[in-house]
Image (cartoon, rainbow, N blue to C red; front, side):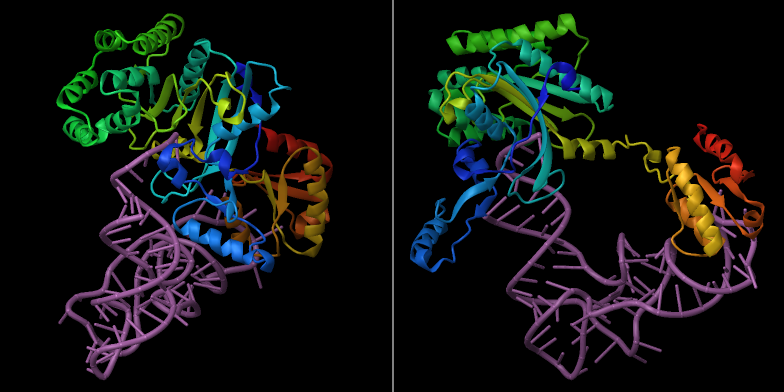
Length: 431
RNA sequence: GAGAUUAUAGCUCAGUUGGUUAGAGCGUCAGUUUGUGGCACUGAAGGCCGGGGGUUCGAGACCCCUUAAUCUCCCCA
């Protein structure tokens, strides 16, 4: 699918320098990075230093002497590092997709894993909002094909920045977003409380309340938000971007599950423009996809002015959702095509020869691992979802023949060894 | 990082206010049935009751510690 949209595959190492990862995911994120203990700490010559360093670790610091590598926390930052390192060789805009596990030192629980797979797609080196449109299209198409009903929520960090500008200054943005992001869970009143705790005055809280009460269709929301934020340069810009994307999607696709959500904040520090989140409807599960635009991601790695935008699929959670919705067909499990019964030494040898022919013809088959009663061999075939049994008993052995039995219909037929091709076509016949 | 719950047979779980030999269903194995499965019946095997300590005449059960899992909050995919 990603290839269809012009993306190339890429893989990056599971390990990164701790320094590369720290500070990119917010304070909470930093705590959740899996750190790797350095080797060689037992070296006597370095033990004094190691002990001193460890005392610092106990104070909550990350000291290179103890740990300088870590497992990747997501796929975006390692990708940014890769782009920064290889910028000379890449053609921009560079589009890649990546399916790999990531690790978070979290307490595992429902829908939350210490190790889980992400499937990312990013574009670096383009400011065009067409990329956003493309990603929304990818999300919508992918989940439609998986038959999972979702809501694709979108917001723009610029609106949040504008809101902060009007409510006490840009430095308040993190505080404000952390609070309003919780509205779904704790409700408006609690959010207002939290905002006050975080140092906002009555007037500012009131303003945010108005912002949070924006509702209706995407167009209506846009209009209401514009009344509040269009006075600021950033607010105006953010609203324009959202408007463009919404209109484009509406005009050129049949996607109907794109919704504006002005409370959507998303934790990752580096987002600057559009932010996305995908939630399955009718299933209680956190977001199963997320992403956004970061106008200067590689700047942190010494390559300024490279904008990017990307999305991520939470593979394990999507799997969980599909399982909960019973979207996996029951007959996925399929064993070999044929089980040859083992009815003694000579018969087994004959069966073995037969199997060579079957395999050459592309029929998967196996022989029961030991001589056993019919009963047992039949039950084995059933459990392994094997469709055919081949039986060579004493009679067949002397006749140079074998019995082919279809285990689901119970119909069986005797073939001469020379007529093996007929048997094969019987096996391959779609049932 | 904060909190709750759970841990008993291969699996899912019972086990009463502490009391003799710790049970069931499923699965496994054997038999009814020595060359034709799915069903049924009969029987058998299978347990350091997560680990360590304590209370008690007596602990699967009560207390403390420990480990692990599950779940909630925080945060996130």
